[in-house]
Length: 127
Ligand SMILES: [Zn+2]
Image 1 (tube, rainbow, N blue to C red):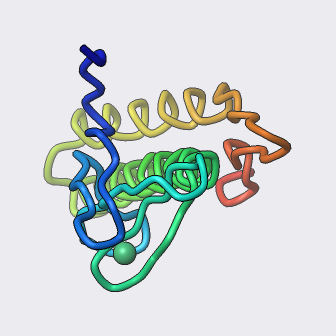
Image 2: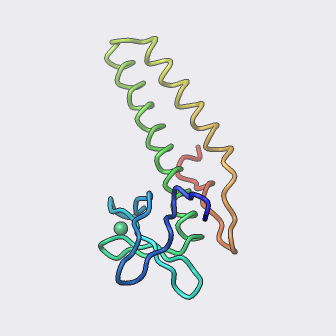
Image 3: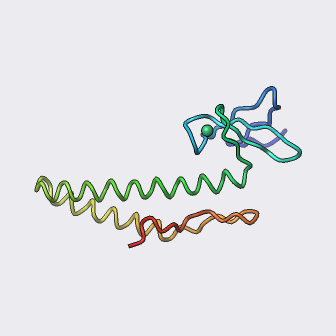
């Protein structure tokens, strides 16, 4: 019996693709998987298509984007609370939390698969 792989069910066919537990990084769709010439190909309903190394890199990029979104939200919260003088201790903590996330992002080691390098080091938040 094959081991249970939570991301990949046994690959389906072009006529009957197997749904994965993964969402498409380009839209909210669920990815299906099929075997194509020995490679696994993942596709969503509207036609975004990935091979596994590409999907890993794009997923890693998405993690970094989401972390930067959290930094932005915390810094906005800090500014709002501070400027409105509503809860200055919380404003200070929000700034500290944003700084910790920046440190976490700076420490990301990007994935390297088959010549693809994940973009764990974009300059979006470099300051
Ligand atoms: Zn999609």
